[in-house]
Image 1 (spheres, rainbow, N blue to C red):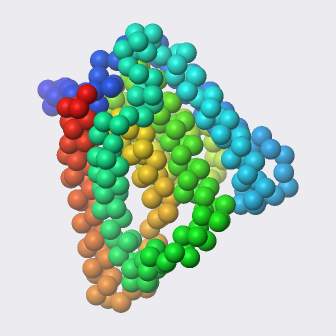
Image 2: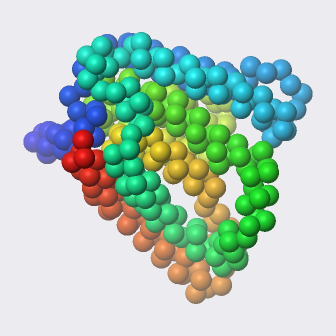
Amino acid sequence: MNNLSEMEAEVTMQEHPVHESLPQIPVVTSVTCCFVLAFLYVGSLYIWSTKHNRDHPTTIKRRFASVSMVMMVAPFFVYFFSSPELLSREPFPKLLGFRLEGLWQAVVIPYGLTVLLFIGPIFVNMQNESIRSYFDLDYWKGSFNSIIWVRNHVMAPLSEEFVFRACMMPLILQSFSPLVAVFITPLFFGVAHLHHIAERLSLGFIYTTLFGFYSAFLFARTGHVVAPILVHAFCNHMGLPDLQDLWQQDLWRRVVAIALYIAGFAGWTFLLPLATAFARKTTSTRE
């Protein structure tokens, strides 16, 4: 019991200063707001009646428009349902994760940690020479001209992290501890997708849910929404590790790749609390 109490105290102390000693709002208020935001977001994706699939340019453009509307509405939930004491104490943009203090740490440290986590898949990609395309200007021109690429790497990370992290986390943190909040917020997106129950029971859904925990953790620890947005874009780019591609490598490359998979995960696990604590302390000293 003492160890559990010490762990909970440590998590609370490591919390970003913006979320320390937050005034409380009823649990039913914060949870209801998050459910409504989740259904608004997901509902905006399916509000259009179209014969095209999700990757058709017309479908993507319409979803861009409807999701943008949800992004405009979402901050009002934070403003109107947060504690008046909190709103008088903290600038509203700061509650949503928009701040200059500690910005470069919130960009570099989480992104570097995520690259470390994916060091194995990155090594495999280098063996396939796909890494060279990143230094090709035509590759980037083609990417930004592809609406699917823009959806996956720009609009999806920006909209999802803004609604599900920047607008939900400030509400949840006024009713729950940071540790509980990190595990609660990713579930709202899953509940809003109950009509896809068969798809949810897949490796992809597990990957998405685990990323949701990671993303919420980054927001709570750094106080910056830019951290989960950039990491989200990177994870969308990398996707699930291609184990089939791994086993098609030569023996020595396969051994090196497996070692990097393990080392990357171990290093990420070890450095995550230390590095994000550094980012939190740096921001704290500047405020």
